[in-house]
Amino acid sequence: MEDNEIKKMVRDQYGKIANYSSSSCCSPSAEPKAASSCCGDTQSINELGYSIEELKNLPEGTNLGLGCGNPTASADLKEGEIVLDLGSGAGIDCFLAANKVGESGKVIGVDMTYQMLDKARENAIKGKYKNVEFRLGEIENLPVADNSVDVIISNCVINLSTDKKKVYEEAYRVLKPGGRIVVSDIVLYEELHESIKQNKSAYAGCVSGAMLKDDYLDLIKDVGFKLDKISEQTSCGTPSIAYKAETGEIVDASTIPKEKLEEMNKFANSIPATSLKVKAIKPN
Image (tube, rainbow, N blue to C red; front, side, top):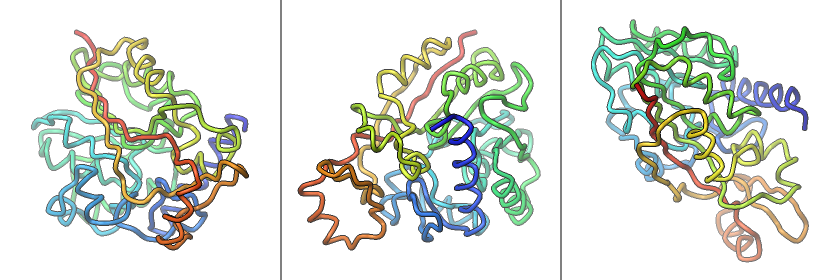
């Protein structure tokens, strides 16, 4: 797939998600079913690092279940800080960050999808957030000034970019010296089968665009960041995509009864991926 084709496909897919007010990180269907997280249930929400208490205070329609972690939980946000969210979606992590930085702080969300921006702005009005701003833009070319941000967060988005190095170069540019970036993202333990790499649903589902874990971490360091903390979230409920090794068939796991999926997984290879949480610092 060409880069422009991938970008259009991702934009269209997440525009549909915003319109349907449902979830997909990891659900490849064109009209995804509503869910409370990318992994589905309350237990999974807790595993991602969110608490029911903090989520219930957010505007309705904020949590579309698109994440693979909770970067705000590890960002050590302080009052008065300026926070930038890469791929802000309907605003869930922006609003959680806004609650932590307070009225003296500011949160900027950047997203390339008009529908998501509309939804996020509506949610900001519903929640009466005065310290949050949403901007149209691509994370490879951020509409943000140099050295102007204290903290960057991103949740299950960078894997969707076709130029991840440019994303981290842009993050480095806009961060103040000493600033930090906290990212939850999907990475791979081993290379994917070619049929998965070329599958559009698997790309929009945060799988086929993912990098190998070691390559991902090396990229962050090569840009100039100093790695601070690294952790993995390997358990995320029932997988959303199943792969039959003998046929190369991609199967949307959300359409398969749980019992059948368990049976199928006896002879299917699981996707060798995990949710990685990385905290890195821009040196002074």
